[in-house]
Amino acid sequence: MPSLRLAPAAPAPNLPVIDLEAGESKTVGRGRQADVVVDDPGLSRLHARLSIDDTGQLAIDDLGSTNGIFVNGTEQLSAYLVPGDTVRFGRVEYVVSFADAPGVSDAPVVSQTILRRVSMSQAPKVDRLALEALLATSREMMAFQDLPALLDRVLDRLATIVKPDRAAILLVDSETGAMIPRAVRPAGAYSSVSEFASSTVVREALNARDTFIVHDIRMDPRLQQAASVMLAGVRSVICVPLLGRSGPIGALYADKLGVEQFAPELAEYASAFAGHAAAALETAQLYDDRERHFRATLEAFAKAIDARDRYTAGHSERVTAYSMLLARHSGQYADAFETIRRAAMLHDIGKVGVPDRVLLKEGSLDPHERALMQAHVTIGHGMLEPLPFLGASLPAVRGHHERWDGMGYPDRLAGVDIHPHARLMSVADSYDAMTSGRPYRGALPAKEAARRLRIDRGKQFDPEMVDLFDALEQEFAALYQEPDAAAMRAELLRSVG
Image 1 (spheres, rainbow, N blue to C red):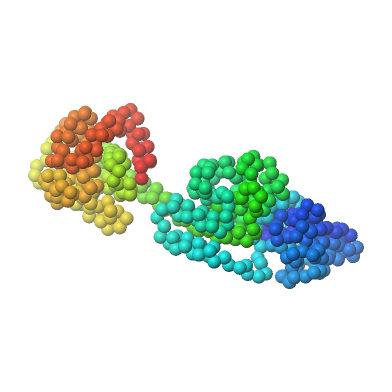
Image 2 (image 1 turned 60 degrees about the horizontal axis):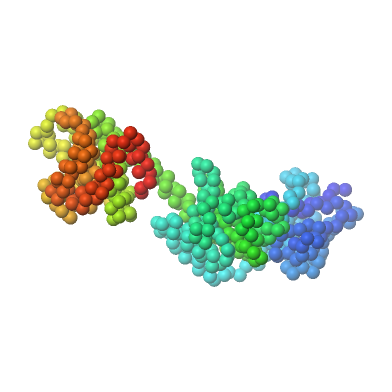
């Protein structure tokens, strides 16, 4: 006579599978005295009895449970079951089948952890505070610019509803696969996953792509031995995978310490907040990817410009490094690093419109040739102007050859009428020009270049920018002439902006 099986209605490797043979009877509940222990607060300690008589008829009886049993969505005190029926104890839903039916695992899973959110026969009561918090986060998602601040607010709002003792939003490192905390509550409580959560919890949630909730760590044998969990005194855990278009990108983790446990419905709210976090992280990742590709394109443009003249090879990269050094130490441009980076990298792009006979001429330029050379700033401005994402960089591209005394080009601007970024970049550009060799002269020593910058303080250059250079002269020299100067410049550009 075939045996019967009750298996989770959806893939849930951490719920027990219930097998029964003819003449066998098993009790189901969350108490240890039950034959089948299901760790769900919605179950009574002894919730129901399953039994098969000698004819193979499977019956289920309610043992006086608080939340009842539901067969095919209808509450029953007792009922006969046949393969294909669904049974719900509390929030956990099972399907009846023959034990040897195709697609049903023969290996029961012994963990007591709940790993899915079953549908309810009645809509749960909506928490007004939770709804308001979710709506507020949704509004912020529409126009967020500060990802860390947004993720912190997600955790703060989660705390008002779920009330965890600790919580974190984790991101999967695309290169190493490690989980990196991106937001943590309480702030500064930990810096790595191993410091606060068993990797089992996070791994199970990511693998199953579903909410992982442990109501009581003491009932899960795998987590009882987790050193991080035991050390922290964790009692209850919720972990929700953050799913992107191509798969898991991170996780939202929350736990309670001591004796308190998470109520089952809180997993739903955690999942809703996790959805916001996932959208923010994926959007930020797409933005980062776009920025990386864009920067690579700018660098390729700059190298193509520099390659036309072997005497200026690497000029754009060096000017960018010097400009970022000045910007970082000025204290005025924290919000403009990327704008300055783009301007410096592309400041000479207009030289593609300068004839080779002028650009590569080894002698001095006549007035006509000088006018053609000076036109590179307006040519570059015109080339980049149609690109809206470069709009903030255009004043520096156009104005980096203006002079403080008004004798520069192309617009003969003077003093503070010159854009601040252009004034900053003028110092960086001139320093590199003087310390680079030319057909008509050799490269000047770093000290001589610095001396000439100071001589032209208040004439060619903004006095404040020259004063800032004075404070950074040794760092400029190191980026120019140290044996590992190229690596130092690359590291500077990675660390700024």
